[in-house]
Image 1: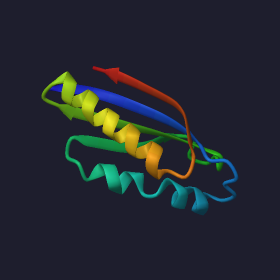
Image 2: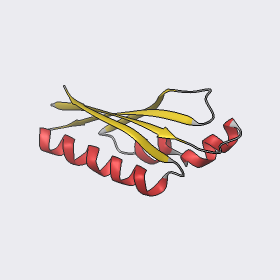
Image 3: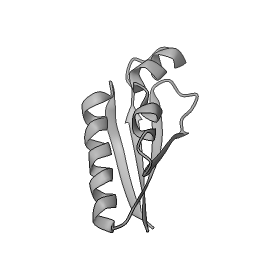
Length: 93
């Protein structure tokens, strides 16, 4: 079993409320948490309106599958979230 940790920091310019922040994040937990190989949580910046940090823990049978899932998550975030990706870090455990 191979495990990867993907952490993504997002900027949400112009966000005025926590409700708007939740709407702009577009249900990341529900969307990515459906996959049994992925665990997801908002890992920092809970109360900040203009930023959000999310961590995805990915488990797979090979490092290549872990990297592939992390790439898919990162690509989908860039396409669907109403914000800017500021930083991405990956760690293979």
